[in-house]
Amino acid sequence: MTEHRSKVVPIGVPRRPSDPGKNEPRLMDRVRAALRTRHYSRATERVYVSWILRYIRFHGRRHPSHLHEADLSRYLTQLAVRRRVSASTQNQALGALLFLYREVLGHDVGWMDQLVRAKRPKRVPVVLTGS
Image (cartoon, rainbow, N blue to C red):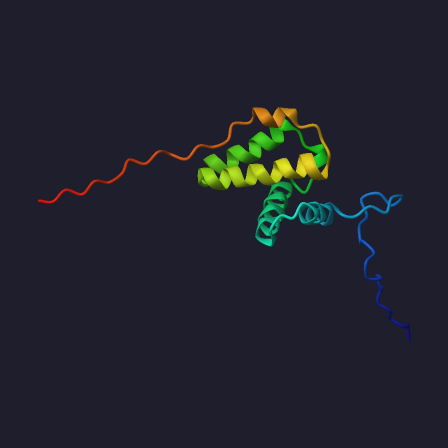
């Protein structure tokens, strides 16, 4: 009879390190740490992490440092056109991705300044008349 042993992975050891030669924290841990050191609220942390994860999943789980301007533009266009999210939601996603590239990855993202933020539609006030 053969003995069956399950593989034990020690706590705190990443299962799939990005580079086995380096002992770097994982991307989302770095995002959370950057948000906390800058004293962002927990609610903002949750929202930014959520948007960053959606962005990564949209691009087939590719690391954001391997993505380019066209990839970001395609994601934001998908939010606006296919998902039809509001202007404030689009801007929230853009803010999260700007934070990721500038503050976490340390990329020079001057091209991101050229991205146009979504504008809220102007609403005409409703005037009630007494009749």
